[in-house]
Image (tube, rainbow over all chains, first blue to last red):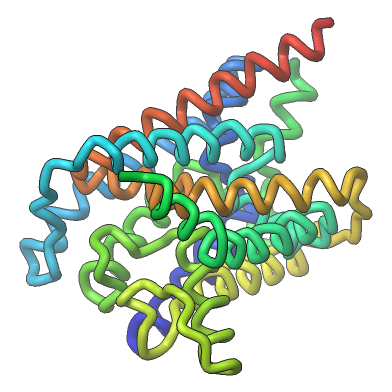
Length: 139
Length: 170
């Protein structure tokens, strides 16, 4: 229950700020490459650096720490790489990361609402067909 | 060039005069993600504070499990009650759009293509273990897989951008 309330509150704040700032987690790299605009890229870097500093700080004041993480096996590393490349590639074609699509959908952009419908159907497809198929094919 | 940058940069709020930049959003978002993950039980797995793909999956699967008695996958953090990040983001963005007068219905241009984009991004994200936000969060937490994933994500964005540029120039 704690997690549900915490994520709801965090989501409302992040959604509000994301709508006001047009934050997008793939748009930063895209805009910088296309028009040398670093506005969204600064947001991306700020997120990474803040989290990097905050993880040990929160652990120091008594929060649950992260890690240690074991060395990943080769198959997982390759799958992660393929999946993440796909997220980056298709998100750029779709004009925004999943977070930006949520924000746009709430703004009345029905194209993003369609994307979100596909997003949820995609989760069902992954667990019913894609993941079992991968488990059968992979060593 | 000015028009491009103007369309990207945020407008100043008409009522409060406050300009929320992407940098502010990044800092606040990262703090929320770390605090939710470490202090408010949004774990395991580690670095799970905010993820648009995994949390949407958890919420959907938990709801279907509760309604139909199925046993679809949910993360341990969502076993008892699901994480509500997607609903929160939708509500927060709706509030911001309504109060700033930016809410406007817009019909989709290519609904089938956009729907398929959503399907593919969710499948890739679940394969990689996180959307762009969580891959960055895992990178910041120092997880090797997160670093590999975020590198591949950046490579994907760069290749797609080059492809878009090539297509536009043709």
